[in-house]
Image (cartoon, rainbow, N blue to C red; front, side, top):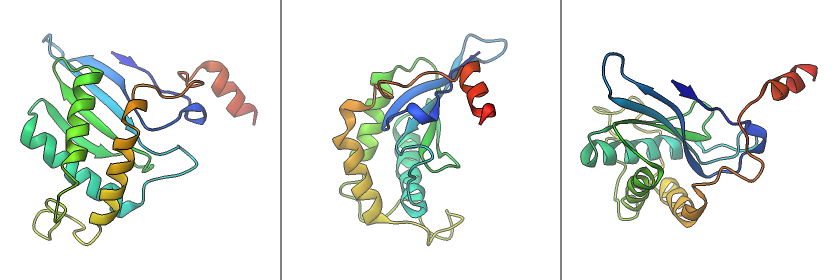
Length: 165
């Protein structure tokens, strides 16, 4: 198992990266957790209705087109989404899938599954907001590979600095 958490003070979203990889016990099946960070931690966040709609669009898209992507879910801090993959996935392949999912938002007339039968908070969506946000993410697509020039994994020194106040 590998887990690589970046010091949130130094990242520059948007970016996409693996934060945890494991092999399913007793198999050679790889599973990975990806961080698709879309807003600056502790500085900004994606508004709730926009994030909720983004989750619906990307989750629906990957479940329809990519059975080895298990889930797309918002981070509680509302600065990004987690993507769970099964099997061999690399940056380029997953970035292409997310790009296609974001492009699918352009011509949508409604947020998928945003109804009282399929959503726990059906009125908490923003079609126009998610369309604008998806376009911003697509415009920054060439930046997704780089979490920023000063981004680094959390170190013991970072944590000591934090506790020293």
